[in-house]
Length: 107
Image 1 (cartoon, rainbow, N blue to C red):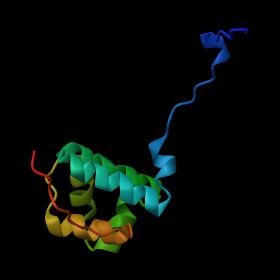
Image 2 (image 1 turned 180 degrees about the horizontal axis):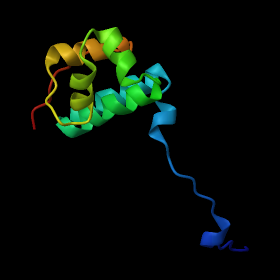
Image 3 (image 1 turned 90 degrees about the vertical axis):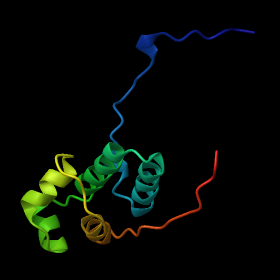
C-alpha cells in the first residue's frame, strides 16, 4: 500500500469570512443563538455587528429602520455602550430575527 504524504505546499487554505455566510437568515439565526448561549456580552455584540455587516445594513440605514440614533447604535455595536433590551429587539426585527428562550440545563 502506498502512503501519500502531504506538505504545506500541497495545501491551499483560505481565510474564513463568517460575514459572507451570515447573509443567509438561517445561518444568522444559529450564529446569534450560539452567541446568546455563550452568555458572553462581547460575543453577542460581535454577532449583531457581523450580521449587520452581512446584511449590508450601514449604521444610517439601521438607525432609520429602528428609529434609533445612529451614534447610539454605533456605540452599542462597537461595544462602547451597553445595549438596552429595547434596542436589541429593534435590531433583531430589522434582521428578521426573534428572541426566543429555552430551558436552562442545570450543571
